[in-house]
Picture 1 (tube, one colour):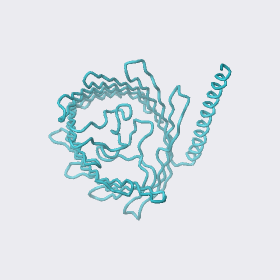
Picture 2 (cartoon, one colour; picture 1 turned 45 degrees about the vertical axis):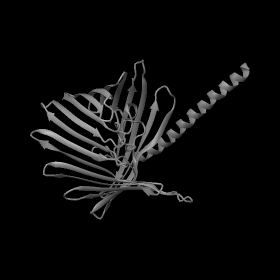
Picture 3 (spheres, one colour; picture 1 turned 120 degrees about the vertical axis):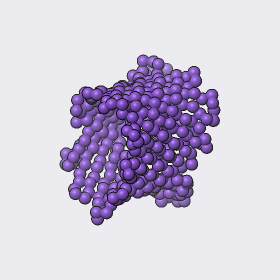
Picture 4 (cartoon, helix red, strand yellow; picture 1 turned 135 degrees about the vertical axis):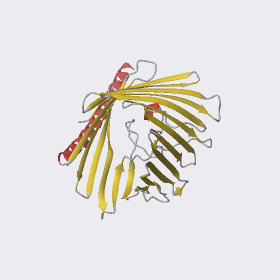
Length: 359
């Protein structure tokens, strides 16, 4: 029995080593290919982010490293961009590599532009379309975008659809239309989206964002409806106390018909997935107030959230976020974020330390 156990353990160890070697080999092959393209690129960029997760009450310390390498080629009326993410968790012995963005753009006779491929997109408040830069697997959009740069507004039409051609296979896809511009000192952005699942197109998702300045204070409003018809409304106010200090307050209200959710956005998840609270449930109301301070490369922020629910008066949730960032030099910065989330008798704590380096 002992010999069989030793043989089994040796087999498991050898299997793990072979798996590690295979993953490393795949990463090296992709990395060499990307490095080769970088050599011949007109422009290239590198971004490295190291984040230490110290969440919970124990002595937890999980370190994740993400490095992004990108290259760009182009002319006066065309361009190609490719970037790749390498993710590695210290101590795990495993790494992964994936294409972050890969797209080509060209001009359409001076009237518009078209971009095809994988793209990271952010529109309006980000409640409907936004890239999740917090997570290792960042959100991207695979498809086509057509841009019209008009005098009165910037209009973008996006489309993605997939049908493999199988027997009785139905199409899946998305379409969106985004229009943004400045009108009489007010910035307005309108986003309209449709979703097709198994050949059936459901209700549209819409987002309207308005921001401007009134009597020296910044005022903003965001009204959003997801595919299921659930609502999320945000009203915000910012005021610069001085050149270095500012205060902000906002009210976020969710409709009572159902839970608002848009998959893949920067709010689709919780603290561990997005680094923020994410979407709240139906009937929730978040009243927040915060302070920001910036001077000599130091950025400090503190926000307090008071969450209630019109459908359940017993629900009380208090959230506090504190962040501190410091620019070490022109190429790197160090930041720490601390959050407490108290719901009833449950008190959760989250801490992240982030080092970002860009050549």
